Length: 230
Image 1 (tube, helix red, strand yellow):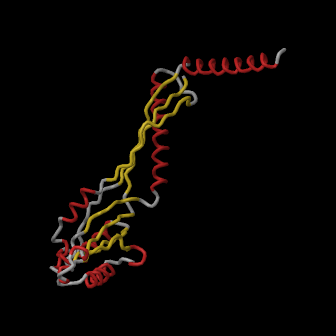
Image 2 (spheres, rainbow, N blue to C red):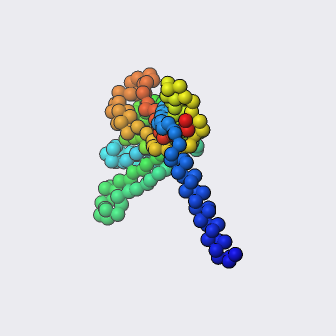
Image 3 (cartoon, one colour):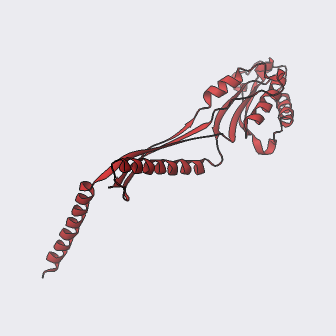
């Protein structure tokens, strides 16, 4: 038999087998369910932005003096400056003032990492004492976020299987193997903006022994569509 004919026949048989397999998959009885899982975790990485500006003191204190005062305050709050604090930006308006040297103003931004709401409260208390209040929360995260994402996905699949089992038993049947699993949505909700605004508004914080901060949790949500043979 001609080699070309043999090759064409082999391709046709292969295609026919695949087509038959698809038909069997579509035509077989199955149950379709949605698996949903949610998880809330307390962040252990809270990133703050601290802004120092000579204008805030009407140029009575230099940026260097403000910086030293901040260092002392953060140490009182239990912060490891080498590990948790870094400079994110430094600027001056020197280029806009060539005549009057007194008009030159400098500002500096720092990024601070704290690991819990108690440490966050201590930082705000100590900085408030030295009149540093231009602080906002940049972001929150968790050091093991990927582990929790994996767990919530597993929980969603388990929830889908349990739902399918219960529905099948209600009609006197049992589910077979999973023939289709599709991720429909995965959400990582990080609500920290409103919290930042609320904390910045607490001007009386320095008068309190230890404020209680109700910090927003990180919300993980995962949804899957599953089909099980019947």
